[in-house]
Image (cartoon, rainbow, N blue to C red; front, side, top):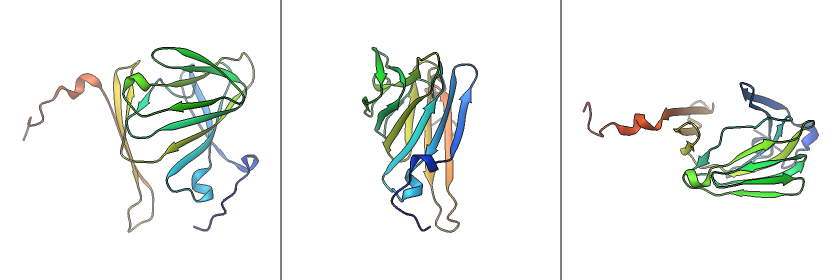
Length: 167
């Protein structure tokens, strides 16, 4: 795939994500369009009163967010922090203590931010509010060139299986 190392955010196409009344966002993929290999970048847009994703932490990938427009809140297990244009947010790897969630607290208007992360897989995510954890893995098989995805999400109590059970 021939790529240029530049893309203008006006030229992004967006995928929509959401669930129920609380979660909604659009994400414009940047990294793969400009040839990035070890970092992922996207432009995320959260409508008024919504949050992009559940409170979560990553055990493998570190994230950074640069707030471009709007106002909101960074929610962590310990605190909530106000967000505004120009803010830079670090979300290091770790367990539930590093969980984070970005919320658009405005009554009107979008909260827009640049999201940057490492792209190491498999990644393990924890979701403290629901007691779940998940494993994500992306890879490109050498024979097809088509990207493959594995996503496995379970409730924490499902992890109480003995390693040797059924063997």
